[in-house]
Length: 317
Image 1 (cartoon, rainbow, N blue to C red):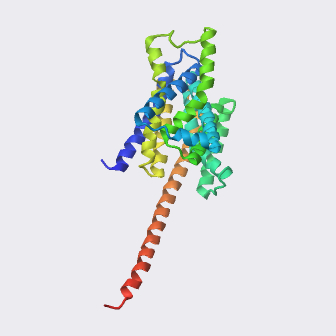
Image 2: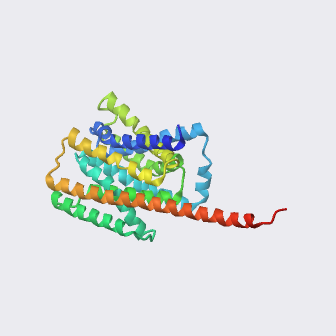
């Protein structure tokens, strides 16, 4: 199997696993969202610690101790992913899976806006059109819900910002996830200690299955991220951009077909506008990638020709 094909397999597996997350977190529902989040953080730290122990890769901790800027960036990334996880768990367990799916549909548009506002990037005309249609979709959905779809917007904003911070840090996935989770581990432990002291903890009191699923939440968190990292190293960005729609499509299907959440005509129209925006966004990205590839090909050919000409002109020896 070629490296690129293996990368697509890793990426597809990661997004399919993320697509089934609503089912997993629904099974944890006897616990409140904050208890689920705290256990997710703690068991992520435990699992990644064991993985790094096997790989014997702890040198990054020394670099982290010497670099305050890196430590500050990782702390920010940890807080952002904590907000994202908490919002997602709350959305799923308050029967708003469809709205969480919307959040991940509009994340690419939020990333583009962050590129303009933070990175000072310039958008192409079709990208502006996609962002404008996405804004119209949010307006339509606001009318349908009777309020801003704040869960979707919080998910898109937190994950988009997290992606931006991670891109700037450039940490390997396992090491990055370990430190980000470790940042959240202290408040998570304090909260779990308080919950147990006040008798409000559900962990260990619901069923053996519930306890095991809570313990495995760290593995469920880490495995898709590691698969995604394997895909990111092998698959072009355009390919990853298309794969990312697998997860929210599965989440939307689960919300409507499994959990029977309502999808009235106005909400469907709002989602339709989002999909139109994403089609424009994706097609424009594919065209831009092809144009860039063609330009590089012409440049390489011209460079080769320029190098060859003097050689051809040399007199015979």
